[in-house]
Image (cartoon, rainbow, N blue to C red; front, side):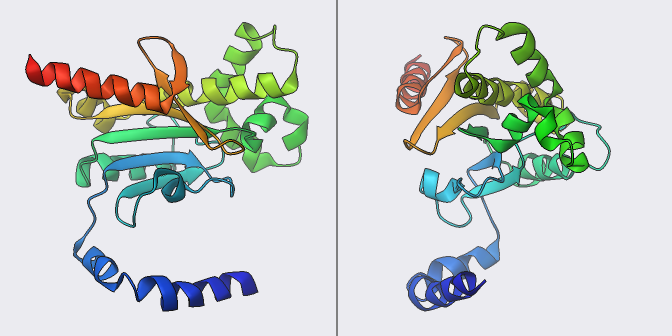
Length: 221
């Protein structure tokens, strides 16, 4: 706790005082550029990763970056998604998984979460991920490879869950909302984005160039 208290003192003295105008401007409201859904894992820092400032990301975090399908009772995730899209008018939603995810490891090894009933219940939101890995990745015997595949497939499953939310479906239908699937490897700093056209994850620099070229072509047309 002492580390946290000391951090607050340094923040107030060094950071807040130097950027007081920016922080005071946040009183007028927020206009985030994206809804960023990621894991609660302490090794993930969305703003550090994306180099964004306060007010630029609307962040939703939970174990395993899971999104319950619409209609699941008591889902705070549904409220956050609805608010981000309908009230804050974000144009992009990112689901960002990460390497060495403990939640996905628990999904692969139920015995590891046998004494954690709330975690077991929560991981039901990744039931489709577990089945995809079990039925389609039986050839992956190496645990690290199997876990990496689980992380990647889970991001895609959660994107499908996102599409069941009416506010997301409406935004996608209008063409003013885009979904993105990312995987962050914290041990290397790399971020990979899923490219639907190629059906695989690519270094995010490659997908960024693709978006820029696509947008430029569309503007010329």
